[in-house]
Length: 353
Ligand SMILES: NC(=O)c1ccc[n+]([C@@H]2O[C@H](COP(=O)([O-])OP(=O)(O)OC[C@H]3O[C@@H](n4cnc5c(N)ncnc54)[C@H](OP(=O)(O)O)[C@@H]3O)[C@@H](O)[C@H]2O)c1
Image (cartoon, rainbow, N blue to C red; front, side, top):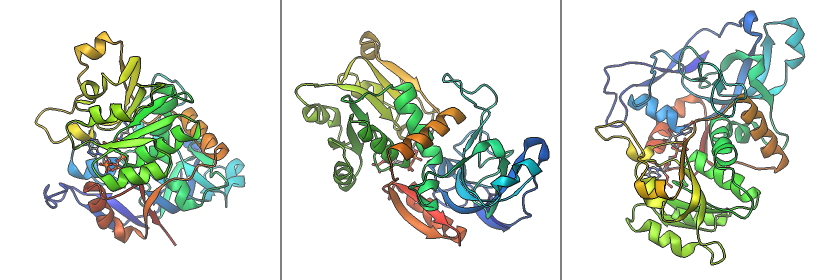
C-alpha cells in the first residue's frame, strides 16, 4: 500500500522542513488478535499542526519510518476476531489517542498518538487499530467532514468543556482563529450560546470568523490587541471568562487585565513561543496570580471525551470548516507548505478514491 513515511534524509530537507515525508510502497498492516484489531481502508485523512512540528524536528519522541497522520475515517475491511466481523463494511472514525480511557485529570497509561511509532499513522491507504478505538461517523457528516474532527475536535472539546468549563452567555477568547482546533472551538462555543472573540494575523480571517458567529476579533500582530479587544466586550459583561489558547508565550500577561477574577486560560499549544532558543513556555505573571487566574495546560483528551465530542457534534449537527480538499497522498508536500505558512482557514483534508 501507499503511505507517507517520515524519513531522516540528510536532516535539511528544505528551508521549512528538516525531515522529508516520503510517499512509499509498504506492506499492508498486520492484524493483532491480542488487541482485537480491525483493518480500515481509509477514505479521508486530515492534517494537524503536529505533522508540521514533526517534520521540523520540533516534536518530542520523533521516530523515523513512522507513517504520519493522526486523523482518519474509513471502512472496516477485516477483523482479527470473528466476533468483531459484524463491523466489516461499517464506516468509522478513529480515536487518534491511546492509553487514556476516561480520567479527566490526564492519561491513566502511557499516552500515544497515531502517526509516530509504535502507533501507525493515517496517511496511508490502510491502517490497523484496536477495535476499541473506532466509532461510528455522525450521520450528518461525509467522510471528508468527519476526518476533520478527530485530533482538533478532541482538543477543542476538552479545552472548552473539561478545562475551561465554558457556560452559555460567557465571553471566551480563541487565539489564532485560522487554525484547525481554533475554528472547531468557535463552532463548539457558539453552539452552546457562549460569545466567542478571536485573534488572528489576518483581517480577512477575522471577518470570516465573524460570519461564522464570532462576536468580534483583533489582529495579534498589533501590540495593542488586548486594549482593542477590551473595547469589543459587551457593557453588561465587560470581561473574558476564559481563553482557549494555542499561542502560549505572553498570553497570560496579555489577557490578565481582560479576564474576570478566577478566569481560566486553557492552553493547548504554544505556537508563538516556538523557534526561540529556550523551550516554549507561558509564564504565569504576578498580576494574574493576584487575580486568581488559572493557567491550565491541556492535551487532546481521553477516549471518553472523544466519544462525548462525537455525540456533541452529532447532537448539534456541527460541520467543520474545511480550508481545502485534495485527492491522494501525492498532494501532501503542498499541504505541508500551506500549513507552515498559515495560509489555511480551517482543516486540510486528503480524500482517497
Ligand atoms: N496539546 C494538544 O493536544 C494539541 C492539539 C492540537 C494542536 N496543538 C497545538 O496547537 C497549535 C495549533 O494547532 P492546529 O493543528 O490547530 O494548527 P493549524 O491548523 O496549523 O493552525 C495554526 C494557527 O495558529 C495561529 N498562530 C500562528 N502563530 C500564532 C501566534 N503567534 N499567536 C497566535 N496564533 C498564532 C495561526 O492563526 P491565524 O492564521 O489566524 O493567524 C495559524 O493559522 C499548534 O501549536 C499545535 O501543535 C496541541
